[in-house]
Image 1 (cartoon, rainbow, N blue to C red):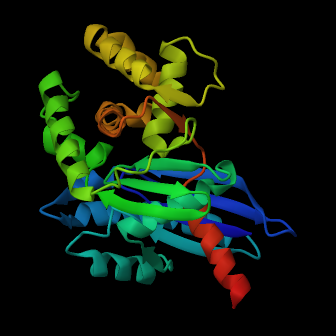
Image 2 (spheres, rainbow, N blue to C red):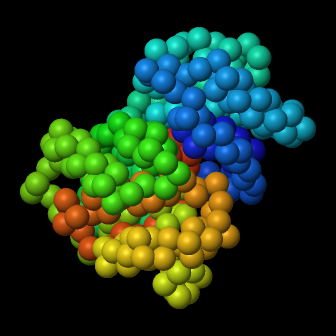
Length: 304
């Protein structure tokens, strides 16, 4: 078995995978702890309290891992740690106090791992993939098994919330500010303009978009199995948020209570990307960076 410990800006997750004889793998267990690490970052440095919160969560997963047999553990961190001034100290403390060697992956590598994670759903089509996390958003463009473009933006649902939202829930003006920041960051990415994703091959992954999909299924009276989100449905969700915020929040608390503060900011980022790049619908995938990272690790192990 293989275990991936994923240290994110919003949650820390442990996923356990079983590897088949044909080298395929399936997730057999998943657990997460909501830490809101991005809330402990100021001036690009994580506070001592934030480090303790993170290490306490990792110690819980250490206990779980120690109860397993024949497992190989990989620990990864993304925007939660990679840009911090005290990154090296945090990684060293995790190794000393928990025993996990953390691989802090770059934004571009994260975008590539996102792509590898959904390869089985793609086929030979040209497509686009977005991953709106708590501290960053990755975008990759691909055609079949070739990545044409992969990059990251330093904005996610949680750090956008802390930068732009003054009270508990974002106002129209604050969401407009998040939209403007996202648009500026998109311009800096220099995404190829001559490549257009095939219909039905615009994918989105991550906790933000999965929670949005579940919320849409509930609020818009959709089937529980619906795994797409259209630009029109995003507009309907925002309309409900502004006109009937009480019911919107109550429903969100039933669907994903840990996302109650940051989901709307993440929705704003995702919708801005769709609008600016001209895509009317996204398909929500359950796979992502953890699966992509594991695929590449298995490939490397097989080649050695």
